[in-house]
Image (cartoon, rainbow over all chains, first blue to last red; front, side, top):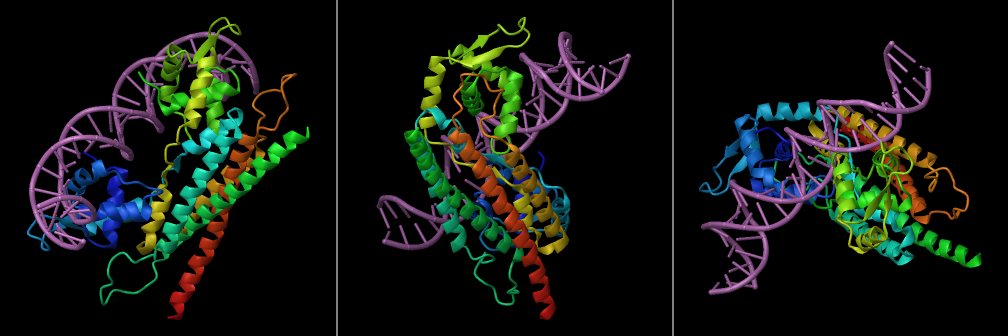
Length: 188
Length: 188
DNA sequence: CTGAACATGTAAAAGGTTACATGATTTT
DNA sequence: AAAATCATGTAACCTTTTACATGTTCAG
């Protein structure tokens, strides 16, 4: 089996600190869930692949062996750096709600309003979650750990906030435009 | 075979006006390409499915039969309306560039700067393309066609512009933050 | 003791992406 | 005459998604 994008993501998370599969899942869900789902079905198989490749190693010290904590190896760090230097895959977006909106001209404005209301809710949730996130607070602070601000995490958080705000602003504007459009029709 | 999301999208586009497979491909690419790719491999098979379901019908009048122009049937219009009333699938985003940014803390700011520069370019392209688009200018205006402003298309265009602007603003801000971060380190 | 959260996996399905294949027509 | 565009399709692949399966530990 080969490494999938899920594999690289695992590598990235393990670069921050060691964890087990379950924790990887949660971390991914929590911190990148809304723009980069990691594939649960691939998670454990990919861990095997990464181990075979020598990119990660198991620390089974913590528990009797029930849970496996994985850490990045030197090779893994090199591979990760290489991946980061590779041009990113183009952004893939599948936004059904927007397509439906595009086709909603002839089915009444209620549909439009509902679609937009739903988008507003989702955007607000994303925003709230990002706002509540303290970048770099990945695990209970260990003494001796450098308290440096994680710039990257900060930037990503700012990105989420900025995009969510733009979405919210658009929702408000859209509502106004719909109303205005209806008024305009009445005047004719 | 069953109907896939690609099928519904085809239905939506045919609701605007009849076209052949090739034109569907182009329309989808042009107008929703950046948030909803239609699957080319699935296009012609789905056209068959839609025909079997009675949702679309072939108009082979135009050409000797080489190209098939498809139009929506009454049943198709109903089905489309039903789909539009169905809750939209959650937005799926796969943004590798953002993930790489998140993991780029320890590989040098050049990587960060490059990632951000690439995002800026993409965002600018999206913005320019959307700006140049005149919503509703789908085909050479036929006489008798109502010159109504297509509200939905307008809203979608506004969305693209708003999100692209937010992305561009974030890129600028991010560049500043990176510089500031480096300055802060020097002062220590 | 009962349910929620922890933890590790496997299998199948679904659908999108890419590449391939073919040929006609139009443009340069 | 060559290249680009038009036009229709097929096949294989790839990866995510979803569902299933199983057992443990911890909290109420």
